[in-house]
Length: 534
Image (tube, rainbow, N blue to C red; front, top):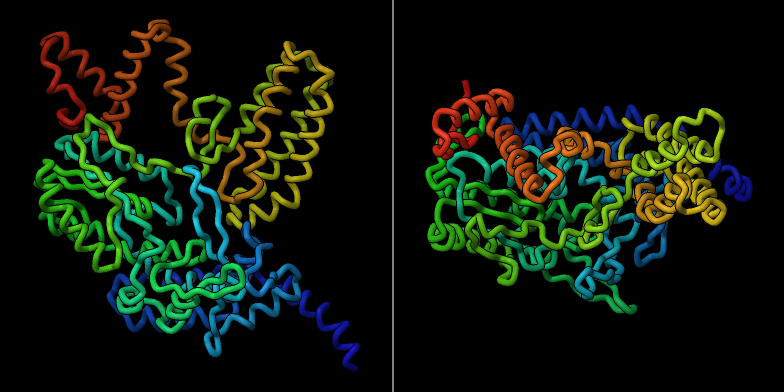
């Protein structure tokens, strides 16, 4: 009987995992999160806590947590116990293991990853059980965190990115009466130094569970070391905990600056021209004067940080006049979608090549020849890859990653083998030879889109955004010189600044032309922030 059970049980459990209705799971968890958001807005803290308890004890939430940690990029990386949840049977059993009663967090497995400056960053790898518990409680707290987050916080948040933070900087600094002085600040060792005592006292999360994660320690070379401060870099919930700690920074600075907001959080009064834009632990503050930033804002920030066990990095914190420029997100090491332009190689970002640029080369190589040519082989494979992307466009990031690994990766490998096979057979100066050479040179960057469901197969989104400028560059003959390029840059800046000030670009340019004919030397009133909307 024991033998029969051992043979049959795994098959039944595996089938149970396969039979989970994931759409129903997402609907159920989503409805609870929506109720949490409503309760947060109503200020009903008891209701928020009870809904979070309900979510963390629900079968569907636990199943989604297991699904997340078994389908993400680190699913094959084990913690100190050496366990991974690869099989459907283990995944099913893992659901029942995610329970508050009797839970004890294990030490993190300490590894070091290289940084761009030659140093190494410590990374803590939790066990699968700890990752599952973190993913489960993240589902419970992220709705509340998103509701209470600072309006201009962009790091580690859904539907927000590094590009959004940079865009917000542009919008703030190009407007009328924008602050002309900028405090560019960075928090020293943010993840490593956040006070455990402060988090346990102020964060609205299950305190015993949070205490387990914070005090788990880490194991290095077989020895366990305690963690006295900080959230471990590598934990699923760590970025959200950091945002919870820093979420009142914008409000604290605005209160010290006398900024007044209305019922719907719109700015009613901002005499000091203060704005705050934060991406994770990197942020900028604008103001009307250097003295105000140094004498009022900096002490306010330092007090805010010291309460949380943090401090600004002296080497990376500067006050500058806007014309001097500043390096917001300097040293950014995330992903960047690019074409083959060599200048991108000078950045610290991980470059991801664009398949659309690759495809364009083969389309040009084929030309008007309607007969089957070698370029069609590459184009057909590329067409299959785009077909997969079209089919998964509404999937989650984790689902995209899984499907790409199963369906797109074999096609990508086939395309690469075809390129290598014909590399030496096609003269490099022929159009097809140029297309093959370009594709091979970009291929390592291109295949990176397979490794992260957040990435796109091309950078068409950015291409569409700059299409009007590209059309102008190709059709306006005056742009074909250095002076022409300078004139184009001025015009492009005016157009984008006009958009940022909510002006109709056609009407704005028409107004400028008319007034310049009357008063050619009076330029100040024609700047976008000085034009009244009609």
